[in-house]
Image (cartoon, rainbow, N blue to C red; front, side):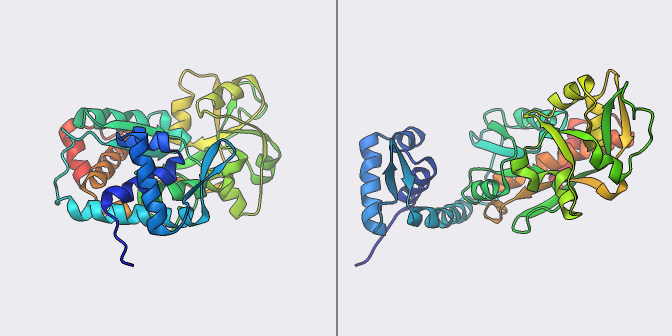
Length: 325
């Protein structure tokens, strides 16, 4: 029997498997629940699988459903690239929803720059900046198109993703001004590992932590006394304890403005902190994704120039030129 499936039905399948909800799928697609239920019935017949089954009070994808979700996302991404004429993306009129996953530390001054430039160039776009999930969850979201770009700083970016360098900085530890080590210039590794630490990365995502990921490469681990959900909370913890917070120097200097802290060079074995822009192959040729990558690279270049002291900030014209390169 010949089977056929159109793009609209494929899109419905992707949303159903992602949301695991007929009502939520109907809401996202702007359709009625009976229409989505009819599409699900047709998909079940075409693919000879239930696709979604009930588990208690909710629906969950079947093994077959999970297997084909990535393929469906790739097909839809390829078709979007094929059907969208080159250069047709217009940020001034686009109403896309864009999602960027960014390491915690970028909320200090990098993310605001990105939001500023996106909102000026694309006032109708909705921008969602998300915190870093586990690597497996991140890869799944990129594959199905739920995430457009990633800005990360783990030691080894996933080889399966497209990667471009953004920023690089040395690593320092922050302690309160009254800490016994506050007058020290640097820390050795043995001493560093004995200290109590506060981290903005949960133990569940050590694989994407620039500090603990590097220590894992060295077959070492530090004493994390507390982890916090927000990067900016860490200095407040440091101010009231003898815990140590380790991060890139440019972020540390932004965090400790106003005084009350001391910066100490981290053990040299930690190396330098590198920041990357990452995206999935499925989005590489997309005009919208290319534009967004240019915005992020331009914001990073603006930071680099300010750090180097050549100029405090880029003009809008210079920014757009840098982003287009």
